[in-house]
Image (cartoon, rainbow, N blue to C red; front, side, top):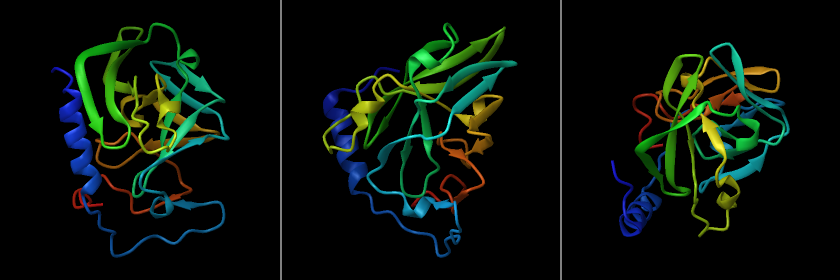
Length: 191
């Protein structure tokens, strides 16, 4: 699959930025030390992560950082990003032609994860040249690596093991302190 032209990307970006989003009828209450996905901003925000991040696959720690970033966006679980220097050498293989377009961050490219003979297809992605037209700091994501929690053996935020964002499409990591509902399940497409 060929990466779309800048003109096609711009048309997609403009369309999706105009889409009206709904809120679910009931939002979980937030207690001390918790955060609601409904308090996250739209457009999304890039934030430094205070806790260590870790990804395990094939009995190896394949990524570990104390310099991670996360992107938070209304209704979604945070997506965590690792500096490439904090990812084990040689475990990511570019998936030729695989890409997606985010209306905020631009074109993402994908990697298979290959460790000790095990392969996880499209387990990670990067934004090589993120959009920076909104002044939201997306350029800070350039070249950083995000992993899907459902395509690795374990994903950790500090001492807490994360679970995948519902539905399998989004790369968000869910921890117990996160309150929703979180988009991804059937019926949440309009969120």
